[in-house]
Image: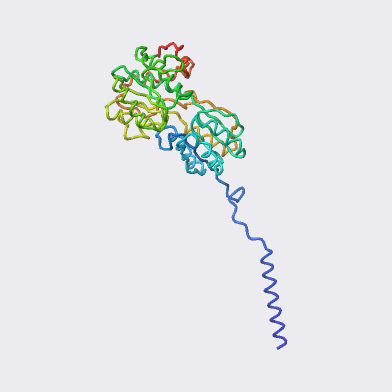
Length: 365
């Protein structure tokens, strides 16, 4: 009996020893996959739009597509975008996004002051500002030479119009939309000075009679009414630089059997219901800028505090691939010649009304 008791005690001791040995032992490591076995944290990127909204088929949509492309190809995490319907929503929306995102993309020149304020509070976060410049060390500012791409649109429009009357509809007045206007009018004038007369500004603050600003980037009704006014005056081609307002321009073109020129994105693709009315689009590659910024950030090469300006030389603006069959080949051929001349520096496109008024139309050859 005593012998059995001793054996039981020895067995129990062995079990306890084994348990403590197990607690102190290291687990076998997982098979190595190269480098640190801890999963890398995904870069989080979020878009805050201006008044045009995500589905404007234009400016904001291009930025969103660039972020979504990065999510697929670079394995970053694309956060749900935040739309800003009013200007006073910019700052709170940027704060909300930057509280989660590593990189917050702010689209639109009207966001300049808000992103300046927020970036100073969130110094550990990164920001991409499109269409304005803020020199804070955690902001990369990207602007475009919209006037260069718009010059090509003006050249092609002047070669396509049947009535010889061309219109322009802008969103909100400002340096950015004025660049679209100035470059476009210069392009028309370089093909036919008479066609450009009704588009020429009266002075550096007053657009010509066939250039209408609707003070909005999202009110499609204003775009519709402004377009009808121009079409009823004999205009048969309108170039819009107005974000979501452009969808109203396209609607008027469809109803009145006229034509329009899209902006920022290839709008025959992003607004397919109006593809028959869209002659072509002046593409501004906001999505490419967003994608490249994300790629650089992921590689540890974020250029905070810098301002990058992108134009024809960088292939950042120009005519989008989709060209309506009604556009004559000579129109696109001439636009391509103008593109080469701008690249070579032979044509210096005016980017302001003041420069447009001093611009001497050039022979494109």
